[in-house]
Length: 317
Length: 270
Image 1 (tube, rainbow over the protein chains, first blue to last red):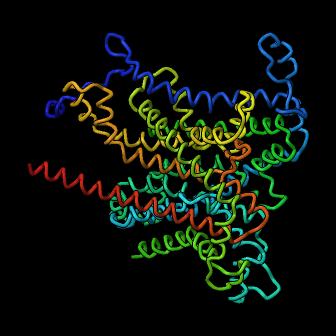
Image 2 (cartoon, rainbow over the protein chains, first blue to last red; image 1 turned 30 degrees about the horizontal axis):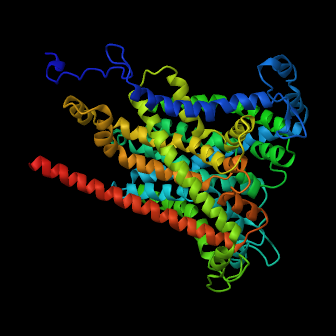
Image 3 (tube, each protein chain N blue to C red; image 1 turned 180 degrees about the horizontal axis):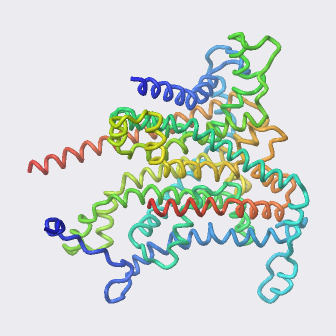
């Protein structure tokens, strides 16, 4: 006997809601779509075209500090003839920019691995905790995220600086002599600590969401069949949590690559990161076209992970 | 059990790592001494100084207004965007639209900030209070959209359909049925947008102008000059406000949840 005769008939698929059967459209429905759509087109998408254009412009001592500026459609020919790839050639010629990009990717990759190594056990422990305890644990992970990013980075300055609390702690437990000081502040190590600290909630939450959904009877079955726990972890738990691993890694890796605040406040002069380089070119050298070119290349470097992230989100949504 | 002990250790260490720096910051805001390493006794001197620091207070006021405005606009736009994502799946350019919702979540702030600034400059808009509001609205509306979207996906459509079948006009149905049901997510989205705005340094710094210095910009410029306990004081107040807000919101959600369960129970008992 067919099983489907026992279940109630499925509800009909919802119609395309913008137009009804007669093809009439409801203006209120169009407004729902149009308002956020236009807002994002104007304030999120259009700026990327402008940044691309200005990355092809020349620096000028004027306001705005670049030429050519758009002088109407009559002068379109001269407008385009003044655009060139000079800024990109400059970026390629000076090794400091290439080093900045590579170093940003390196720091982001190492940080993401560190975040996984610290975040995974935490997420696993949360998912294995008592059901009544879990919402509180989730809350405790989210709470630091609600407090300001800047404040949390600032908090580490007082701990890491040479005359800071870490030195005091090490001296008082005898790990360090009177004259010795912790030499972490303004190095790459401080940057790693700051990044791991700031991004940990972003890593733990997607991992927890994936692990919490897991069917625990699978592990019981494995253990009944004589599979040792560590093997069960690699064969069952980890593969099932893979969507969380991917989501968490992307959510961390992409913004870390362009991070500015952490390398600026905790890193040293030799901590080259591209977000900081862009900031310096823009605010200190006031070279807007070069800063735009840096941003365009950064976007090109990150476009693959961003598109991948969007696809994952769309599948989940 | 071995697992239980491992889990307890991991969570203790993890939460210690997350909370100790914040705790230290709060404790040292009450330190009478200027030095981080010396405990000079309990004192509120830095709170007094903060209070009389006109620049800091002005910045706090600007930040509060920016956050209130941008969170409110972002909540409206984000809710509309979530409705679009969930209910109108076949609009033209849907991929572009959902791309524009998800991309700002991971886009490095320096890119968003710089590109938006260049838009304002090429449109000849003077930078200041409103450009920061627009900038904050733009990225926080995407967070609101994600939060509201997840609520809409688990939403029981039959209630809406019942109202429509009974002849309730769509707009009225939205305000009487849909909105009350998704309200917790909308409010959570508003809070998220509000704190994101309070928090943002990079995007605000690109898009601000004279007279619109926000608190993070102010804090950042002071931090660059060195650690001052005054900053600890204002940070402590911000942490306190956020903690109160988050805890109050979660208690309110819990109460509503309990009430709903009771009502459902009562209805089932009928």
